[in-house]
Length: 258
Length: 274
Image 1 (cartoon, rainbow over the protein chains, first blue to last red):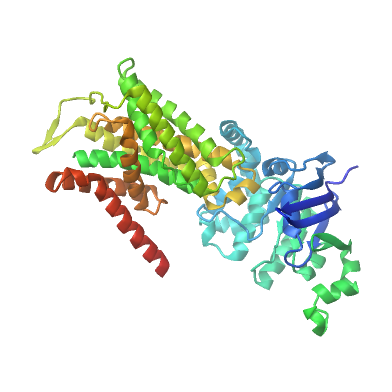
Image 2: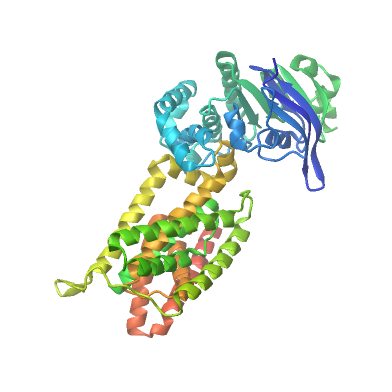
């Protein structure tokens, strides 16, 4: 059986700058995997290339063994891979519920808006059930349903962004910088929620995270990226005990400056 | 009264600008051209079709032209910058304006109003056409505001404006949505243009004046609010008629420019403070 997501020697460039320099990774159905590394290591570029936001210069991306390299973001969503973008990127002027519904509408949206809307309307009862499911998973969102998403707290916005992604019924949820700008307690709650989501619903997780401690705690395996390359990979337990990782990411005492 | 009806037409065109700006960040200077096209097509069609049908056909034709223009302005890949798009709309407006000159000549065109019979309400003479312009403008504004707030397509349009990146990530096609915005806006502008043509005859080069006025109306709400664009259009129309009536008709367009500059200056100061 082929893996849910396979990335093969992916290269992402911005003009002359090489952001991702031949990274390969693999993620199986229901797995929790992290991409760890410092700012500018190419984690987000890699994720955006996987999700169809940037066209890779070389390499392959496969979902269920089918080549999806460089296809539009919408088609990746329909294959079952949805991204929660860095900095949440909720739709601030729309109510929380509209944010969520767009997650379902977007999945139906192809080139023709008319057919997309018809498909959406025909599936309305199914989408209503899905919405109830998301509210059951994230009860706080039900309370906030009518409030413009821009008027909610950072942690709530992260929930809106996750809920919106879940509306597309993904098999793999890719989260870019879950902890960015959020209070530790909020991050802990979100992390617990994601683990539960993974265990109960079988949604695989691909977590892009600067906070290595959080990444190792939440995920089973991780890849460590530096300057666009994979420098280490292994189970979280292995990496946590790796001397290099300890020094560079886990605050191994006073040499943390390095 | 003529001020209120031309003001309403400016509002319709301006609301279209607001819609496009909110969805794609583009300031569409071809909006004036859509209004002129609306007027000209209506003049051409009104002889052969009942006027209601002629109006409908006109709006649909211009909406399609608008969608096409949106496609060109936003680009096949949807990655054209807003400034480049603005310049593309200006260029396309010039092209269409020249085509109008070739097809319709350089004379102003008009067609008969709904009814020549004026109402007399307590000494104030009201032309039915004026009432029609105002009524349609109010109805169209309310419908559009409702659609943006209540329908999923409306939400998708607003989502594109909020964050086109996130919109793309949930699977929305930003280019398609921009084309919808352009089509609806062009339709609104055509509606404004065709309704006001019996009052103010339309010429191939009316587009600049309409675009400037509509932009001034839209700038009332910082290009972001349908309600403010509506109010802005009315204020403009009325103040221009006052200037024409009491000072000098030549200052007609100058008023729009002055109001626009004052507003922009005030807004930028306001925004700098907050």
